[in-house]
Image 1 (cartoon, rainbow, N blue to C red):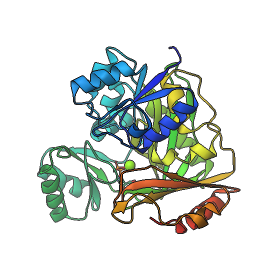
Image 2: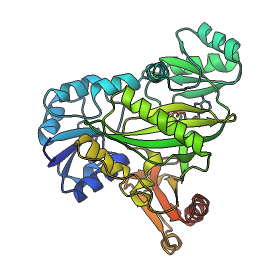
Image 3: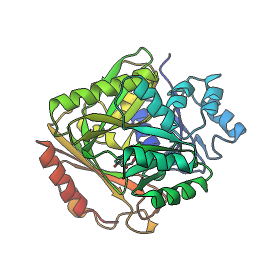
Length: 380
Ligand SMILES: Nc1ncnc2c1ncn2[C@@H]1O[C@H](COP(=O)(O)OP(=O)(O)O)[C@@H](O)[C@H]1O
Ligand SMILES: [Mg+2]
């Protein structure tokens, strides 16, 4: 493949914005397709296709504008990727997406490949959920097979009344109504790994990190994870197995549980740059975004090695409605080794991902405590 002049991105949110920043540094232009103009990435380019990929004419214009296409959002219909594949290279492929977009299929694919995942079962009837509870005990988790993110699509079930309530709630939705159940995992910590893989099959794995979710949203990341080496090795081995099994090309974020008895279980995979990999911008020799571009362009991958012994990231979630401009940053900027990222979203909303802070340090503990200190100095 020739070095791409224009990289097309399906989706225009913060992941596309950070991908675009790296693409520009690497001498490329970007082209964005999204539902709406002036998304965080769309406003960075004149090639801002705001009518979305479900509009065939708009999609065709977008395809024409790009040499190589990737995505920042896995909720695209694989048929659309297949359509793009007829005229331009697009990664990850429709075939890859088909194996992971539905979480029940994803778990089936991974467990058949020998990757450990929580016990899970498809739910076709309400009776199936009651049976799952009888077999596996309470609590357990009902999940939407598709369109789940930031916990939308999950319900923790403590008794059959909860099961009925969750069942009715999900069945009333148009895109989250297909369900499966999962055992509730007693974990000591959640972990994540970013992994890049190019068309030649070259793989680059980033350090295993700890992730802390609050209200089902990843809030903090600590790198590297403070866990035994053997657990790290197991997570890395599973990460490689997962991307190879789905013939994944691009960058992938894989989430894991570390259980109370030191088992590693895969939770889920995202076929794109990932919140848990933001820290790589400052902390690693090559960021997840640069390696995403290298992987889809089939260039040799860059080193994922950390340049400092520790790093931590804290998400900045909206705390109010209104302007997205912060009201207080001076004390934060007065700190050393603290990087502020704001995504330039049009409005601030409570709980919305508005930005993040990354801190490098002499150890994961030190970076984490300074990241929390910096977080305390920031205000919307
Ligand atoms: N089986 C489970 N057992 C315990 N906690 C879970 C389980 N599944 C999900 N969670 C919790 O909910 C969070 C979000 O769930 P996840 O399946 O990753 O959905 P999403 O697609 O919304 O990220 C997880 O990071 C974890 O904290
Ligand atoms: Mg998740």
